[in-house]
Amino acid sequence: MYRLIVVIFITVSPWIIYSQQFGRIKHFNTSNSLIQSNTIFCIEVDSSNNKWIGTDKGLAKYDGMTWTIFNIGNGLLSNKVTSIAFDKNNNVWIIDSVLSKYDGKIWKHYYEQNNLGEPVNSKHLIIDSIGIKWFVKDNYKLVSFNDIVFTTHLTTPSFIKTIGCFGNQIWIADILQVYKYSNGELTDCSYDKNTNKKIILNIDDMKIDAKGNKWILGNYYLTVGNDSWTYELHLFQLKGDNDYSEIKLPVKDTYGLNIDFENETKWIGVLHYGLVKLTNTNCYLYNHTNDSLLTNVVGIIAVDKKRNKWISATSDWHNMGVSVFNENGVILTSLKNEDNLPSLYSLEQNYPNPFNPFTKISFTIPKFSHVTLKVFDVLGKEISTLVDKGYIAGKYEVEFHGNNLSSGIYFYTLRTDDYKETKKLLLIK
Image (tube, rainbow, N blue to C red; front, side, top):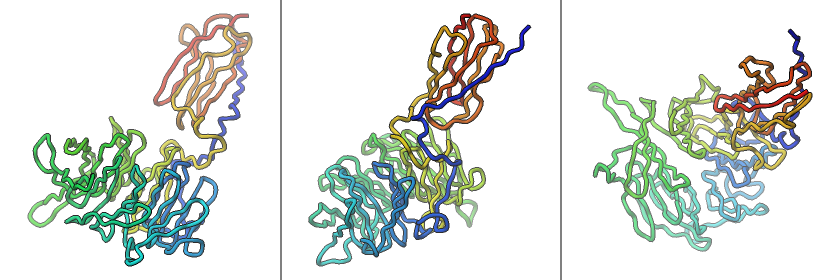
């Protein structure tokens, strides 16, 4: 019988210290940041992972470390910023009483010389694949701007909730119907070819994913008894022009506010419920009660490259500033190129192997995870626990000493909630 003493050294490769990490949620408002107002109209994330936030008192840019504020004192024509979009040259376009462009140095403003109301009272700014800007004016009119002239294309019969684009197709969702606008033609795409019936829905939001699928969030009015009614929330996926399928949501008596994507995952803001995470197999709910969201009215969602969800209530409901939520831990700043972040779990073969008296074991973690790494003998008896704690995304290296072990075969197992792998090591004395 021997007494086992294992001395463990844990080292982290220099390129792993990527980021400043917080808990699952962090809040920004006028009391703890340079945001000029807690009334938020829009949030967008550019290709460099900068966050742009439109408020009623100007535009805020946050790069993970520094806030930059734009208002009528340094370039804007109005402090009310209702929509934000980015073109292929990384110019920032906003609606701030007119259509304005920021090239990183100066602001330039565009409006109809004979109609200063264009595009006042506009919103839902998008930019198509050939650089044409599209927006909604006065809630019913679809307008484009080709860097020279403004053109009003159509007026819908109902209030436009949102617009989106895929290629050169412009998709319009008003309160009751979905349309495609292409080559000057408007097509009603509210009929499902599978049932040959119109989709009856009070539309709350519509987003288009990277594959061109339209995701339509809406609700039905349901009567309850003789003198009351409630909402029933529904989510539809539209492929092509008329191929609908419904995705069930486990929330009732409410309606949706916003939807955004994180790869294949859908994030949905739901009135009074908070934030819903919908994967291909599961549905999760995060709200004021279980995750310290400041509100259960999540009307604005923007997902950044670190999988943080930048959320706020719509200005119609609450003035709460901005919250950053990440179920794996909020990450705001990068000290190294974030492209080095691993995308998969992995456990590498120890080196050297065979070894005497020590060896190194490396593993990678793609997201914040609780990790255990244990060594076992050939009978399955646990010899040592090398790791038992939470790690942010990165590559890690553990040194294992076998000074007091006998020569022979041993096994080491890496385990997280989503991953398990075992490899063999050989100690020769």
